[in-house]
Image (tube, rainbow, N blue to C red; front, top):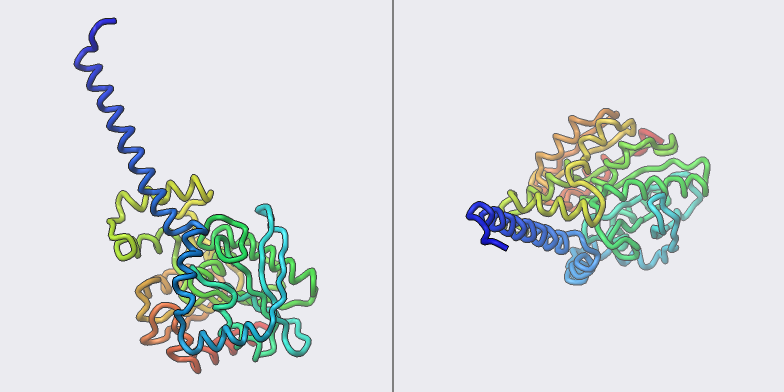
Length: 313
């Protein structure tokens, strides 16, 4: 065989370099995905912060434990089981609140919210989102696949009580899950929704935190993470959009945000609020950082939530 020409050598070198760049691109994407979306990573983060909580959160967890919630699992249309915990009202009630935790959260850590709804006389269902706790999913889906599971939980409640009036409530990633769910066709039993500090889209949220969390520029690293997410978790960060979902929503929604939130930036509230096609209200809590609106001004927060729910019951 004769010697390769200079042009052939250049082609081979370019192909080798391209393959190396492609491999590096995928490696970076997988590294970001593993740190952010894998159940193993989430479990580690949850363990690291298991003793990090304020007095209100501690009181809520103690209430949750003392209520001895019933564990329940149902089949999801996505395949397999999803898990949750239920705390019934002290007196029979047709009102159910689906209380949805955030990233690295859990039903137990949502106890302070559940306690308030319980005091209002409502039943509470606390689902585990994908990649968290009792979830059988290996990956976090930031609300996108979870919206299908929440619909399954809605059906479960209606099967238990055909007269059920269902409220969707979520914090942070749970709030995004609420908004994503309202963009789907829902049974009329779902009377209203409350989202507290949810993001505009998974892509926007990751982009907003890329530098602080990873110390990396958005380009090209976030695109690499997007590719890894599509390959491994089966969803697209850009298509996982709360803005698109609320633009189709007919579920009355209360949008809550603290104006000092720099994790899910405050500007995101206005974007989702303006996009929402449903009946809507907005609550801004001055001085509240991420996910702390209810602790910074609990009186204003809970009076607004209470009034909003009762408006649609």
